[in-house]
Amino acid sequence: MPLTLNDLAALPGRASEALLREEVEETGLAPETILDKLRERLGIMRDSIRRGLASDAPSVAGMVGKNAKTLWEAPDPLRDPLLKRVQAYAMAVNEENARMGRIVAAPTAGSAGTLPGALLGVADHLGIPDEDLLMPMVLAAGVAKIINRQIYIAGASGGCQAEIGSSAAMAAAAVTELLGGSAEASAHAAALALQNTLGLVCDPVGGFVEVPCVMRNGFYAVHAVSAASMALAGIRSVIPPDEVILAMAGIGRLLPLELKETGLGGLADTPTGRRLAAQALGEASED
Image 1 (cartoon, one colour):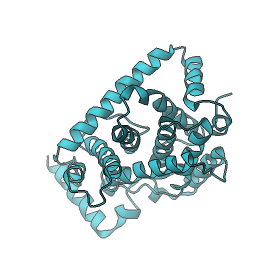
Image 2 (spheres, rainbow, N blue to C red):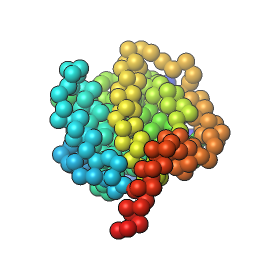
Image 3 (cartoon, rainbow, N blue to C red):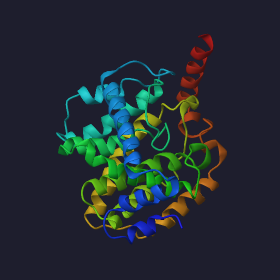
Image 4 (cartoon, helix red, strand yellow):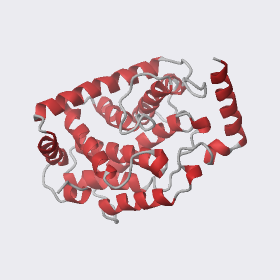
């Protein structure tokens, strides 16, 4: 039987080790082949962060494009380099996505910044080498697979909770393992992150993955680090991790169509949202 989050929570050692064994059994690939693929993806994440922090080029619809660079270069009134780094990294990736740059969908393009923002942000803050990120990335991918068995990881299927919630769960588990957390702590970090995104709607202005998507990745990368911090302190989800996933899937089925990536509700349906959408679509039609 495929592993679940509850299964992972009951394991000794690192959760990623069990998930890597499962992936080897399912695919027939050697462990080093799988890790090599993750090294490649990690390099792409690094490159998208670097480009995103350096560029102020506009996005396709022109609604974003300089937020990551602005934050990265701004004075930090909180004097909290971790918070700023995590936010800026996450937004850099999603602004690269909005410019049609090369990114790693983790698990989707619209939620691509959360995992690298949290995982690479924490690693860089602490001086942890990239090679130590590979097994946490195995865990992140495994968390996504577990969630995807219950609901499609897509805003059109379950609202933004299915995308950013899944990415936050992936990132929380990965950061927890990176910092020495047990399999139990990692599974509960994922559950804590996911349960605090329940009901989050998908409301992209004009249907573009720009507003509120870019900033949302910045916020939920920090959210993932918070979940990891709680789990590492011994806090556990009162609702078992697998039941949190089932709750998210049930909420996703209940959400109306207007709140599932259609651009018909939420922020997309505000006067400013409609105006920006009309402007972006008008510019696109003139090109």
